[in-house]
Length: 106
Image: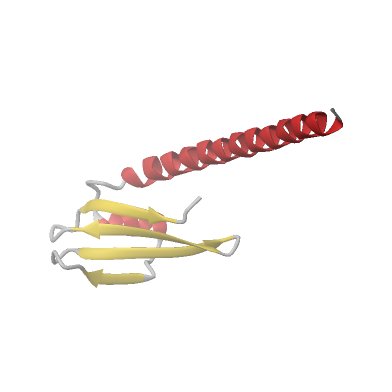
């Protein structure tokens, strides 16, 4: 009889652990999604703007190079809490920002 109750209690504790663990993961995912959404909203304001506007707001880039499409890639690198944040903008031949990628930025 005692072992039956112990296995029941063990099952309840394990179930509670997984419930709390997965609820915590969902909270972290929700916060991360909100941060990414805010970052994308901030960077999307540069789409269609001139390269000079981008450089006025963000300063001189860490890297500039031509990509495989012949467009200019402008790269800004920063670090927060030891994590590298890279913001990469694609600029066409008319000096207009046509795209961006943000990695590790929060």
